[in-house]
Structures are given as C-alpha cells and as structure tokens.
Length: 345
Ligand code: GTP
Image 1 (cartoon, rainbow, N blue to C red):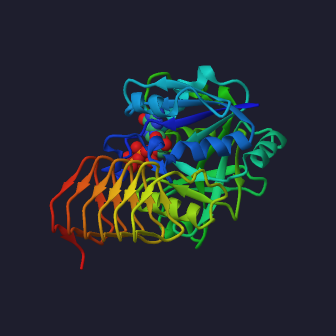
Image 2 (tube, rainbow, N blue to C red):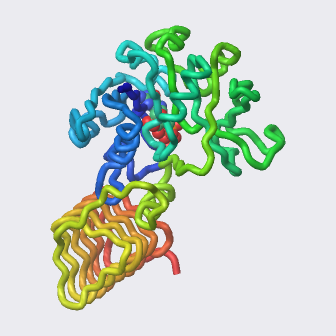
Image 3 (cartoon, protein in one colour):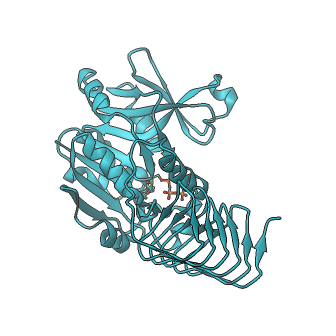
C-alpha cells in the first residue's frame, strides 16, 4: 500500500473559462469529475491514500471529491498562496511515509506505476521521474538519461536544435520520491520542482523510467478536454466511468452513438444529438436543434433550431433560439447567448 501526493493547486489559466468557477480536478469528463479517472488509475497500482495539495477553489474540490473514493482515503492540504510545484510537494512531506507517488493532478494516463516502483527499488533510486516519448516536445520538459536510466539533464521547453532528435522523452508528471530528498527545500518558499529542485538531484540517485505505447494526456486546455472525452468514447482510453442514465426523449428526437446524455435531461421534438456529444444532467435541447461533437456541462438550456458543433458549454448557460456556433467555441459558466448569435460559417 502506498500514498500519493496529487498537485491540484494550479489555477488552470489555459483551461479558462472552464476553470473560472471550478478547479481542474472537478471538471466533468463524461459527466464525472476528471479526478475520478486519476484515482481509479492510482488505486489499480496499490495507492490507498491520496493527499491533495490544493490552493485554487479548495472548498469546491472538497465538496465534490469528499474524503474517500471507493475505499481510498482522500486528505487535503491547503496552501494560503501557491508555492509552485516544488513548494507544494514540500508542504506534503510531513504526510509522506516511505516511497511516495507524486503526480501532477491534470495528467490522465495508464502509466504503469507498478513497473516504475520495481525499477525504483531495483535501482536504489531516491527519486524517479516517469518519462514518456513524444515528437512535439517543445512545450514540455525534456529529460536525458544515461544507459542505466540515471538522469543527466533537464531541458525545459527546448527547441529541436537543443535536443537534436525527432523524438524525446518528456517528464510525464509522475514521480516516485523518498521523502528525505525534499530536505533540500525550505518550508514556505516557492519552487518549481522541474526548474529549481530536480536539477539539484542529478548525480545523486536520480533516475528516469521510460514507458512507450501508453495513454498520456495533459488535460491543460479545452481541446485536450475534448480529446480525452472522445478517446474514452471511442475506446482509446482503458476506462469508461460513464453510466447510462434516465433522460426524456420526445417524439422524433434522435441520439447517435457514441454520445452520452445525463440524468433528467430533456430532448425536445426532432432534435438531433449527433456523434460524440456529452450532455450533462438536467439540460434541455430545443426542438429541431442539432448538436455535433459538443460537451455540455449540467443545467445547460439550448433553444429551438440551433446548430452547435465542436462547442464546450459550461453549467448554467442559456442559449436562445436559432443560434449557430460551429468553430470550437467555449462558453463560460452561466453565459447568456441571444437568439440568432453565430460564429463560424
Ligand atoms: P496553467 O495555468 O494553464 O498553466 O495550468 P496550471 O495552473 O495547472 O499549471 P501547470 O499545468 O503548470 O501545473 C501542473 C500541475 O501542478 C497541475 O496539476 C497544477 O494543479 C499543479 N500546480 C501548479 N502550481 C501549483 C501550486 O503552486 N500549488 C499546488 N498545490 N499545485 C500546483
């Protein structure tokens, strides 16, 4: 059994406006909080206690995730001010016991932590970073390792010239740490674990563990939220937590699969819910409206004769009749869209 420290303090600026009124971990994916996918993965690898280091909208986090998930304990540490990824891990140090999994709370993956732990023990590592190969690495932290996996250097958001290869291993945001490695940090100070802390570990029992052919997605932007949702519906992610729920379908309303409709939602006459839509609880889709590849959170009302494509709509939004949105629009919480509004062609 093992503890996991989950960093969930970020404001999620790239996920705005979705993250304006909810922290990233509770953003719904197929109508369940994104964090549930992460907790399921951790549980599968023997984690029995999750420690969330929170800062942004912590009361909402606690309200939604509560104090346990399917038998796994959930504890919360609240930061008064964000201390960066390093400072946040340092805050959790007193709660760690033995080898601890530390993860960025916005990465969804099936990375094999069990194999990584075996490697960590066999290498007598003090800190191990999970590594994942990508081609477009310029927005990630690239990690170079020696033959035995020992880490040689870190390059934050490097250019192609700096790395010199088409493919590179990036920091997957998954770490195994012996708690004492955190002694080098001072309490209450702001640190970036990638920039300020990891470089200090080099040459002192610091290893990278590589995994190929896995699912890995940093859920940092609205496009990636849509990608994750589509991947689950198309079976490209190993877990689907959605359940069929009761909703109202009036005469002539059509639902094409894969799509998901939440409990208490009303589909009015002749509306068409096309492929890859996720509609939350207690929504209403008006007569003759057509939706394709959209994500609607709970309590969204769409009027008559609307066409919505590739649109993400946050809770409490009301769209009046004859609206046409077709260009990757993202509508923030409680938006009001006037009739005949349009975007795209
Ligand atoms: P952006 O603002 O869109 O970049 O997102 P973010 O705020 O989540 O930042 P980033 O993606 O760099 O963060 C990676 C992970 O670390 C996320 O899971 C964040 O929640 C977490 N994180 C970042 N900064 C802090 C912090 O100061 N405190 C805590 N507790 N977690 C943090």
